[in-house]
Image (cartoon, rainbow, N blue to C red; front, side, top):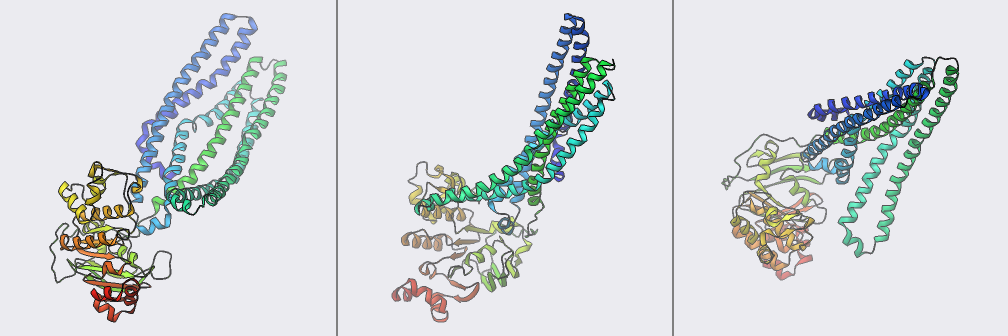
Length: 582
């Protein structure tokens, strides 16, 4: 947690004001037993009602002022803890967005969600407790012991014996329970994973009538988390009864030895009551300390997970070269993108997903990429905008190594319609403007027409202002795909990547899309990844992949003669007449 303390520098005033006023409240609390002792020894003993009322008014005043100080401390703690949590979340979210796909794959979506919500909340609670109770509880223990020594040094030896015993008890229990808090956080990750899968895959689960199986799966992971929590709870539950048993013995000892001291005239009855009150204050303060230890133990485990993300650096270092962003002019004889002997293996894998791939992409060229499932098509197109770095070889963009560019410069040249159509909650207009926030109405509609989405967008209530639900659930699969293609087109990129992004389109719409791209995007280099041979056979060149290797490259007619893999794919999908027509 120490490394996260840097966020507390923004709340120095609250960190000083809160504990200071809580300390004053504790001082007033320590004064109350002395006032009570004077009421018993003077007011009640002498039957002086006026004295009792005056001292009672003092106790009431101490209580009111103490409450006011406690509220000031509470307000300071709330401001500091909420501000701390907000800043940590903001920085954590910003840092996550700097990580490459490799780190995000390693961390996992569910773990990240748990960290940015549950873990930050736990650390935030620890900050609040730090301001409210960390100063007060130890001060009460020490202060009550000192006050007891002030009243009677011999009886105060009971206090000096009790505090170390309870402290040792706290240490033993906490030492055994701390490891389980870390395990519990991992169990919460599993619950998050199962919940997320069930919510996103609800239709699939119901389609196969697997609700009962998923309920059992959830009960299992939830039960594991509950078992850990119960085990830790059993250990922590020993604190309060064990503490109170020790305290009760201590109170009995105070009454016994205090009574003996009263008989000899060394103590008064009121002072014995004051000593008992101080022991109760210590008892309650140590219980608070026990709860603080639990809170800070949980927070320490959560802070470790938070710092793990903060300490993780992106494996892809950003370059400084900007290029000539937005300049679509390019030497037609020079490739806009060049791949030389590239190989790639996913982090943690010993096998190459792609191996020894080389080809060039020229301005205005349409390239089709085809291959069987798992041949590396999506992996290849993910390397081009540098979502991952190549393991071997080099990629050059406009003659400059890709790794020398800034991320913004690279992404400004690419328009990407991913394999899975992802739309965000908001209007169609907001979604289309992601690549170009200043895009005009005319530019939006041009992209919509090119993506063959005008027909359905024009019929929607509000048209561009039509609100898309989370994950685009109020749109069909084909509609979502067309809008993602339109979003990629809005910025008029140099390179357009369509990663199997027309798989949900019917043949007529797909053909219309290809014709529109040919006429409206003549200056773009277009990479079309597809499973359909009919969708890519008109491309200027076709790249055929098999098991991560380049099986062939050329036009449709050339590949039909020279590439066995491509010929098999075409003949499995098209008739002889359709094949020859290409």
